[in-house]
Image (tube, rainbow, N blue to C red; front, side, top):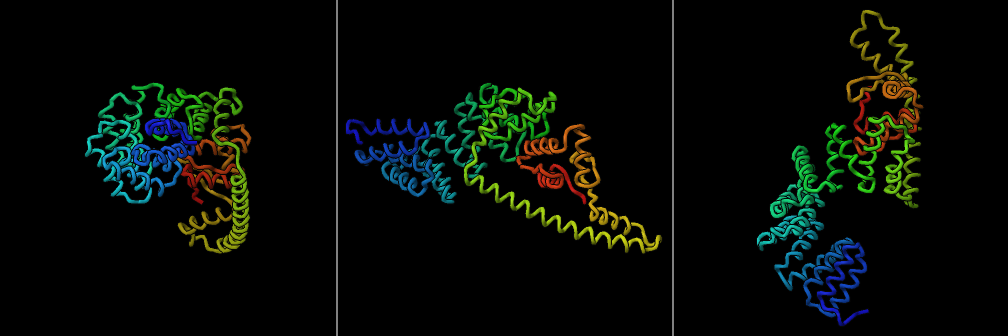
Length: 388
C-alpha cells in the first residue's frame, strides 16, 4: 500500500536497503510505488533499473536507465547501469562510451563507482578494459584491500600471475581478514605448484570463508598429504560439512541429469567393451601373422607392431606428469600407481582419493568407479598421458 507521507528520497533509501539484502522483488515493488507518486524522480528510475538488472530483466532495466538519463543525462549511476545493460546486449562500444562518460564528468574519484564499473566489465569478460577502472579506484583509495585485490583478479585473468600475487599479498597486508583475497591467493599458489605456500594461506581461512568447492578440496588433500591424516580424521569434518553445505540437496532436475549421465557412461563403457573384444580378435590375427615373418625382416617395424599388439591385448602404457611410466592392464596400472603413492590402501579408496586430488588440481571431476574410467578421466584432466 502506498504511503503518501514518504518522500522520493525515503522511497529510494528503503528500496536501496532491500536491494542490499538481496530482496529484489520487494525493492522493485517499493520503487514502483514511489514512481507512481514521483514519476520525475531520477533516483527511483535508477534504482528500478538496478533491481531489474539483478532480476536479469535486461530490456526493462535498459528502459529504466534510459528514462533516468532523459531526466538527467549526467547521472553517474545511471550511466554505469546503462553501460552494463549495453554489455549484456553485446553493444560493447556503446557500453564503454557510457562508462568513459563518468570519467569525463569527473567521477573517477568515486571509488565505489569505479569498482562497480570494473566489476561489470570483468563479469562480462572485458578484463583488459576493467583494469584501468580498478587502478583508478586504488589511486583514490590506496588503503582499500578490496580495490587492490580486484587488480589481482584482473591480472590473473590476463595471465599475469606474478603481478596478481603481488596485488593479493598487498591486499592482505592492508586487511589480514580479507578472506576472499586469501582464498584466491591460496588457489594461485596451488596452481603455481607452491603447495607449502598454498597450505599456509588455506590454513588461515575458515570453512565459511569458502564459497567454492575447489579450494576446500585442495585444502583437504594438502592436509591429508602433509599431516598424514586419514579420511575420517576429525580435523577434516568441518571442511567436509562445508562441502556438503555448498553442494546442497540435489533437486529433481539434478537427479534426472545424473541418471542420464550414468546411462550415457554405461552405454559408452558397453561400446568400449565391444571395441576391445574386436581389437583382441584382431590382435590374435596379427600375432599369427607376425609369427610367420622371418627374423631378418623384423626390426623397427616389429617394435611398432609389438606396441599395437600389446595395446590390442589389453596391455597399456601410462605416463605421469613427473615422467614416470606404468604398463599393464588398466587395473594393474592403477595398482602400481597406488603402490607407489599409498601402498596398502584399497584400490577403490585410492581412486576416490586421487579423483579428489585431480579435481583440486584442475577443477575437473574424474570417475573413480573403475580403473579404465579413472585413467581415461585423469588423461582428460591432463594429469597423465595414455600412450597405448
